[in-house]
View 1 (cartoon, chains in turn cyan, green):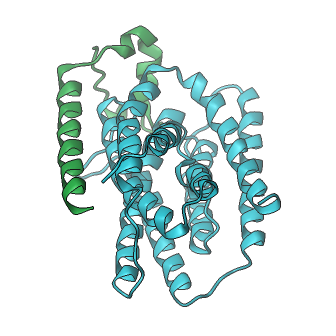
View 2: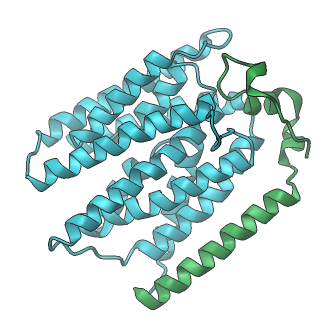
Length: 262
Length: 60
């Protein structure tokens, strides 16, 4: 086992942003590791395993630092209901996408990536425009269900962008920024557990997973999953209101640049 | 650290009422303070990390 320092650093930075702004671990880190020269079977399952652990860890620490209050006992509160809704749709979507991949059913890659890039970019811009709006939106559960379904559809067809769409969708539906981040982090953890299970099932059919990056990505990601909820707590929500849409715009641009430049 | 223990039904239409109350009622400096409970949780996480890395070092 060896720790690759620059991979630890990259994992730390992208997990910090993922646990603070609710998006970017997969979208940001995957192309970077591909550019360095790692291949998909060294990167994709390892990111899923790492995000499964760091997502749940981040959710626990968001709860610990009171960015959210998840309830295990019945009746579960609204935050927990939203998390279960987002995680449930995400789990179905990732399972569906693995089945599609197994049967080699593939949608035109560039087209769906461009669609998600434009969608995320557009949502980020709307998020910035909404900053001018006075007061807070009331919670709109139907709208949130719609966004969760849209994000699930995107993930199901293999287009990615799940984090940005559910994150921005929550904000448009009236969820408080800090709480939205916490909900997405825990939901993504559960979605990645299903993703890991699917990958392990595939590996039992002869696909070999290379674990060389696991200790490094786990180390950087795990450290960030503890620190990030604390930073979310300390900094004012007004900062996150600005950071989240700007980061969504950069994720949209990154997705589009992967289509048109790489 | 000042603990905010709001009942959710005090803010029936608002998601994230506790985080919002922390922002409204505490300064950033007050929000920086960490409790013994926080430290205990962090200690558990560190122990989990060490055990996981020990497993990696023997299995990978």
